[in-house]
Length: 314
Image 1 (spheres, rainbow, N blue to C red):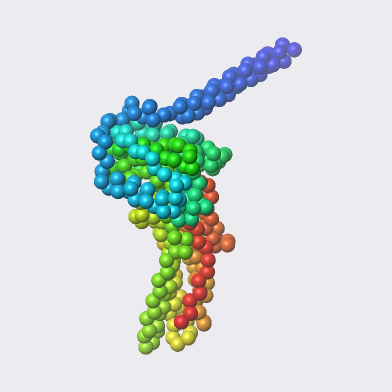
Image 2: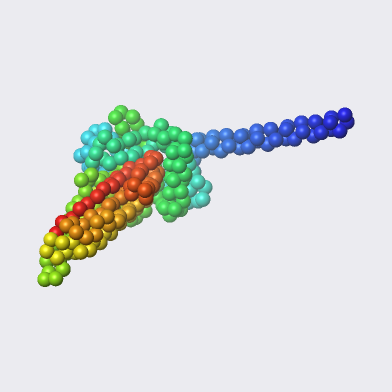
C-alpha cells in the first residue's frame, strides 16, 4: 500500500510540474504576441536617426509615377494622401521593430494587378488571411526585412485613402530608390495578354521558325520587376518538322518565380510544347505539379500563372 501511495504522490507531483511548465509556455507565447501587437511607429521613431525632409529625386519620381498609375487604373479607390520622412534605421532593435510593424496582423497590405482592378485586395494581413496562410505571410515579410533592409535604409510613412478608409504604411528606401512598402511593392502591373514575338529563317537544307511568348511584371511606378516566358523553335524541311527545341525562364525582384517546359511533339507535320509558368510577390507561394505539368499559386500575394500548350507549324 505504501508503495502505491508513494507512486501516486510522484505521479501527482509530475502532473503539477507538467501543467506548470505548459502554463509558463502559454504565458511566454501570449507575451510575445502582445509585444508584437503593441509595436508602433512611435517605438520605431525612438530607434532611428532623424533625417531632413528632402526625399531623393529617384524616390520622389517613383512615388509620383505610382500616383499616376493608381489614378489611371484604380481611379479614386486608392490614393496617396501624404508622405512623412521618419529617419534612418540605426540599430538591430530598429530592424526588429520594423519586422513587427510590417508583419503584425493589423498591418495593411495590398495584392493584385492594378491593370485588372478586380484582382486588387487591400486590408490588414489578419483580415486577408487566416491560419497557416497568415503565419506564412507574416514569416515571409519578416524574412524580407532581414534580407533586403539593413541599418542603412531610410524610412518614410505613406498615408493612404482606400475608399474612405485611412491607413498608413512604412516605405523603406535609399538613394537608388524604394526598397519595400507593403502597398507599393505588394501591387504589380501586368498585361494579362502577355507579349508575342516570332521569326522565320528559310535555308536551302533545314529551315527554322520560332515563337516566343512572355509576361512582364512591373513595379507600381512602371519599371520592370520580373518576367516569365517560353520559346519554341522548330526545324523543318518543306512541310516536315525534323526537330523541336523549347526553353523557359522566370525571374522577379522581391518575389518568387517558377518556369517549366517540355517538348510534346518533336517530328511530323508540326512541333509542340507544354509550358508551366508563374511569378508572385513574396507573401505568396508557387508550386509545380509534374503529373499534370502545371504551376499553381496559393496564399496572399500578387501573381500571374500561365499553363498551356503551343503548336508551331512550318
